[in-house]
Image (cartoon, rainbow, N blue to C red):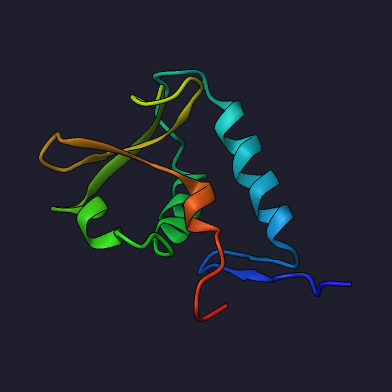
Length: 103
């Protein structure tokens, strides 16, 4: 039997990667397309984004806020970050939760 992979973020710890996936999936679906993510949920998105392989490029000049939007290359919804210069980029929380060398 495989050992559960713990996910440790700056804001919270998940005993299993599946618990982290469920948490962010539920967050994503609490908001309608075009909605701005609340100040309460923003710290968790910032924390999971720290695990993104392209974090520096994603953050760019800095993040003003997060939104929920439709992805450009597949149907559904995803998180978008809006930078302080007004530029935008989407990111996959699933990518952020994939195994990392430090897990």
